[in-house]
Image 1: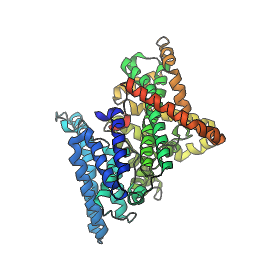
Image 2: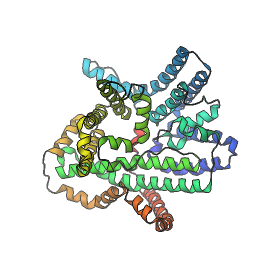
Image 3: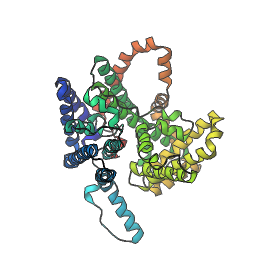
Image 4: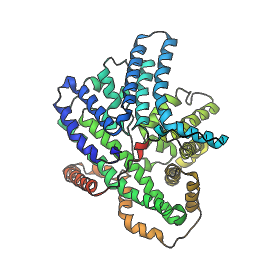
Length: 461
């Protein structure tokens, strides 16, 4: 797939931004729509009709919701638009999962669907994104968009189309109509893009090789120290992979005059799971809270119903990430921990912040093991290595020597240490910013030219 490599992005961006900046203000959204459709179609042209139909159906639904007054008619329009959008996501992402489980339960041999083996790029992200529009128009939080061009540009906005952050229509509706593009915004956007690129290429890719090496060895052949070392590596990889792309997207948006919402806020400093999910993939957490948890009743209902609402949210969160039982278990794992924190654990940990940090780190690490290992049999093997002391010579020392530096760098940059240095020494950091960003950019480009290992973990979602 062409998007598995950032080299395409580097070829595409100069043309896209060149066309965008040269276009007069009144036509910028049209240019943005066209270049975004090219960006999407270049990698997945066979799914272009799906994208086009989703745009047209939800655009029409918005117009109808803006005109209709009867509650029943409005509900019908909303239901049709949501079912239409979610239907594609459900078909491509979950149909084979359903067939596999039917075969397992009833001993049948229903064939798998070949067409769904590859997901349309970013379908989980843009489906949730487009639903914010129709739902907000239905509830009167947003006005129906009359311009098909502006609406289409919102749906396929290429900087965050593939892997987020999830941008609600209300986040950028005003900027779709009028936005300023200044030199300061362009400079800030470039800086954010470079930081995101460095996070992805220099940190995520390099530390991720340790996890890949351990997978290739086989979990049954590793020691307990190496199992924990590999899990730490995956924990750092998925953070810098996803937060790096989010920063790149936010930076590209800023350079175009858009303000995308923050998606990460140093989640690994959390003292509880609840705090972690206020800092990790913040736009997804916010989406589930606003469009699922609160409509179900949130915490305004009886305690039993409130916990049921949480169960629904976390089951859906797990399934959103993937059509596999490990993702379902991953979601339920966090549901159980959050319930424990609400019932008694949070009060206990608040009085013991050091213990809270240790608990948070341990809970997150174990959670990522559920996320990383799709095969449940292999997961059991991996857990046996994590929790049952097993020695395999000193295999972990070899990986510490090879990956020690990038592991330390990953730990340092996952903490707000540099932010504190910047706040204490703003003048020095301002002078060092340009050399630092230039070095990161040069090293990142050099790495891309030289290396072939460049996975984007969240592209599969």
